[in-house]
Image (cartoon, rainbow over all chains, first blue to last red; front, side, top):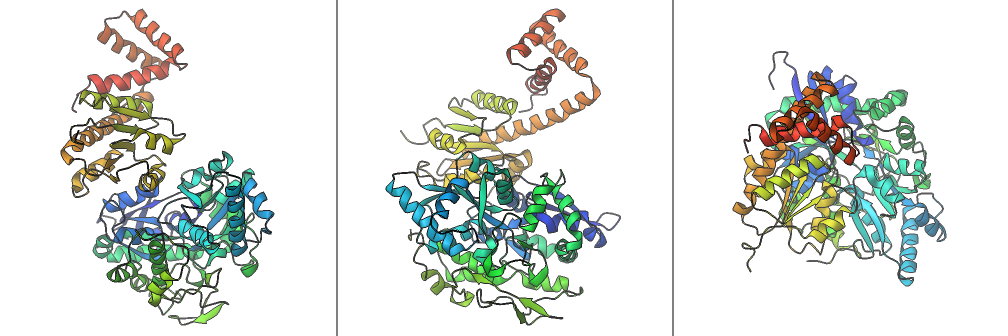
Length: 415
Length: 202
């Protein structure tokens, strides 16, 4: 780490998705260099690789699925590693795309492509019943990983209409880049994945975007910066510099004037290696349904605004609630603290204290309490949060985790 | 018959056909005859489940790792749970595997001493292939295709006692049979010869 130029080298893993933008921008737009960090990007082909290479120390930090560090700390990963997430890499960014055939079927049940998640779920239910009556195979949905917001959001949507994932429909894991082809080939009927893959499917004419992450759970995190806890402790100063670089990169990504530069950075062969037209359309939400509840200007992606990079511990606990709901883990009282302490607002605050950043005063919030944009307590300036929460109006109070888990009619049977 | 006595069925998933054949050869040399190869990723999950493997070796850069792991978790057909790597408490071995670009999945309950030699062999061969690949790259930039063919001819002349003309005809015939360029055949031959005749350190 201590090379003669006093520049610290940090290796950062990323998966070619739009929500790698903050990490890519920190490395390529000068923000890391301004903090005397040589940020080396490593493009990876699977989440398993990110997980394993972080665990054995082949990379220092990585863009991770927001539930991934939690899963690791709960012992769900094959290699034991204690991870922390001191920053989120933005909110929004997923879409649920469905095949043209399934879209035609749900359209007959009142879905008007406004992204309304409740109506979509009810229509899925009717289509599933019709298929069962006709003796047709179950619908198959692609997700990118079992411990992903893509999985939990899709399952939440299905569960709303009484559809049991893995019973009434089949969930399969497909690499995000292969989703449009799998849809075209009829191997899957829909998928929940990070952009630009929903947009790519729409532009290729293989599917349509039926709804978005932000129509299911507003202002919710998608990826986080994940790293080993021992690395964070041993490199506290370097991590602080990195977080400042990432924070300023997130502001840059949000800035409309930087849109063209953001598109070409993402499209570059060494980054996403995808047609700039697709990237641009995905960032603009061009093919996403106009979500009535919070129509534009709320964008599909938010990288920094409204505390989008803040690692809310209530988000971590919501992911935990869904891991319990779908029987990925058994509830244990002592795990609540492990989950809460995986997300580290304390590290975030300490790193950003010297910037002119507006940081929430609280570490957790009640998800779904804000139905309209609301000013909240912050370190400085004015911070407006919300609306947040879920399409079905259900409130998640992180202090009432057990009651929350028990409140779901549709859940995996206890082992 | 107990599980310890039954021959292990080893599944190798790798789109790189040269690497697959080198791994397969290593397995057979070590007395493992029940080897299943998947190089084409179509219908991957069904074929993995149908194969009922005891050990799966997969290259780390394969984007289907997440898919494979999920399928191994939920598949009712994979009757015994499959865990990653042989022994996660052996950090050095795990790191060596990741270094070499190998991921391995092993059914629960297999004795470590039965699986470790397989993984060690795979790691050594992956590393050797990577070294050879780097050398071939170097040769490529250093030599024209012509010289690569000359070098391949030389290997055939030495190893099979052929004349220069016979060696060239063999390369040409192989290329025609496989619908490949002579230079491509020469390249695989140099790679394979380096592995098989070289320092043989595995």
